[in-house]
Length: 522
Image (cartoon, rainbow, N blue to C red; front, side, top):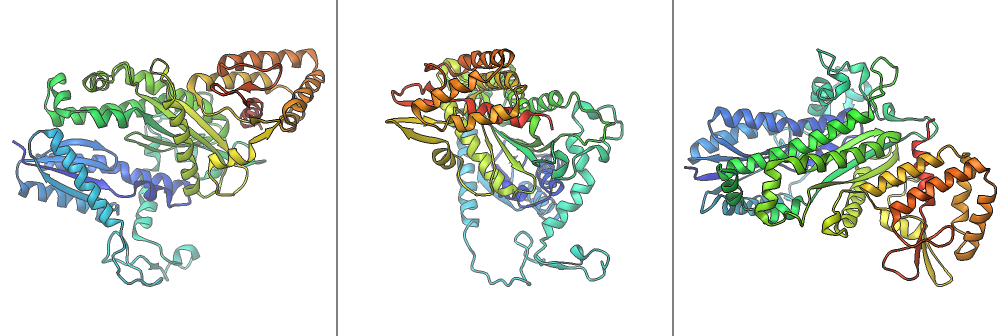
């Protein structure tokens, strides 16, 4: 019989990954956190204890007595802190009552400990004599006077111990992140390093603009499901123990997420040739829990995101453990496990930490749209943003200031997103019709939609008159596809009435121009 439940959780996982400014170091930070799964599994097995939860950065351990648990936790701490140089929080609670009640006590305990660690401890520090925040007995600064060939390594102020470890593990295990993809399964020794993206520059499609795409995805419905989920009730339905049910559940989510990513990456890289001079156009960074971070070439981002949304929903709907969890919570028919994405297009070299913040906001906006859908139409949603300047502004504020205006007592929006997955496919199909139109003519539309209520309609009609019959046919086909996507009342030519309003209008033309620019070959 188990008497204790412990949690080992890596602190500030996003910060560990995003604080680097090189692609290899960012992926290395992710690799460090993924390594916690394997190390914790091996250590717990050696101590003959039981894992009740095991995802990247979070492990729950069950033990019959405190001595065995303390020995196991100390070894896990030694491995994660001293070897991987990751900051961790460890909490232990007695097993009281049901497993479900014990888990809630554990989560409360770990949250309090994390909040306590977030405060300042008042310890003195100096810029050139700073202690490592993870290993206080070691200095955060390093000076290598003997390495005279490399001035960057000879003296690097405030170079922390964990940064050195990240560089080392990246060199050793960088190729492991790509092993599961179809294009590298023919290589017996693993992916050749010369075919992999080592720098942000390797993911640039065109030197003319240097843009790359950052795709961030998050599972929908999981928070609502976990809030209602009773592990003891789930275990009864599955015919197993509660801790085994929790492990099965987190494993099922992890498998669905990784399966969706693998199929999506294989799809968008199907035409890539390992023998070509171009490196692999996708760099997965985080595939853990409910989160996905992927960097890729900008022309592949939408196809990657939509395929990932579709595959995750398909895999989750076929997974017995996840569907049983929905039944146990009474959410069957009310909730659906889907994936929502934010896609940010930014120039390579733009601070990655800022990209992460903006991508998170896009995911939040996509989830807002998803929550507005009816129970019978639940699906993943997508939002995107093309970052043209280095101003660190919020996406919502930028749209309100630059893509919205009032005229003649009416409000006009030059955007329609966030989109559902179905709408995204329609928009992409419409953009494929327009991408063959002369770029000069398409860019004229950006000025036309800003003329105001009636003038923009007149200008749009005149613009259509400049198209030849073949071009007008492509425009009509694109508009037909948009009619199916927007599902709203259309004015004579240009604007659509925003559903649920009487004087707010929107147009998709600006977004179609952006889609054409994003997917246009160099």
